[in-house]
Length: 287
Image 1: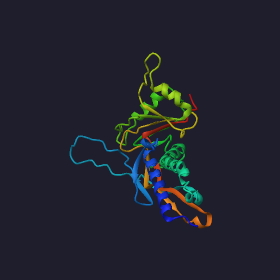
Image 2: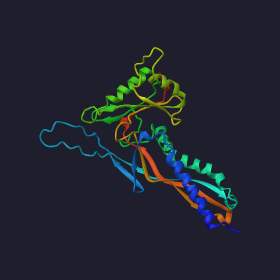
Image 3: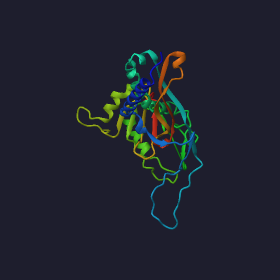
Image 4: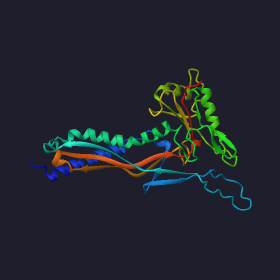
């Protein structure tokens, strides 16, 4: 005896509602690190300005800044997750036992971009950004200047202040400060207590770096790695490109052969690097 179609519809409607409610209620911890860009194609190509446009006194003709030859392409990828539900659990009204798996699938789908961004950070010393250099490199060029946004410095008050000052002083190709405002210290679990101490008050109620930046702990950073970021601008350090957000699906194609219904989600998206000027990284192995 097969499964009643109305029962299947009821189960699917309930699972979909559970998925969507959980998905909407789940936060993505690293969302503030990336600019969300809708995509309507298999890939998107981003032209970048060598100079971020600054205001100037208008004398004579406008001095428009052309887009440089720097371009960066992000190709969307497909991702999925699937929960198989044996037909007997549906037939005997026990499908609700799988609701926790549906909720977990929704939570993991919402948080998956965290992994995409974590992958970018972890491969930042080898994966290339718009200027053809690794995102974290010792030889980024801006005008006549060369900048390094990668280091081995340990996380301490002196080095945090030095990294902050370095980023704040980065100039564009015209020699004008870009206005970088580091506001977020990203650390791994091993650096959590250290980060809290560095930007909090000491026992005497003093600290030269008190509230200099916020801090966030993420397993994306290993060991004593740390990263200083500017997430205050319209352009963030990373790009989260979304062609198709995660959505709920059902499939009965193996109901006859394997006696199972499939419930799942799929998404079509990817992440990539934006401006290296907005990020500074150290593996924390030095002094």
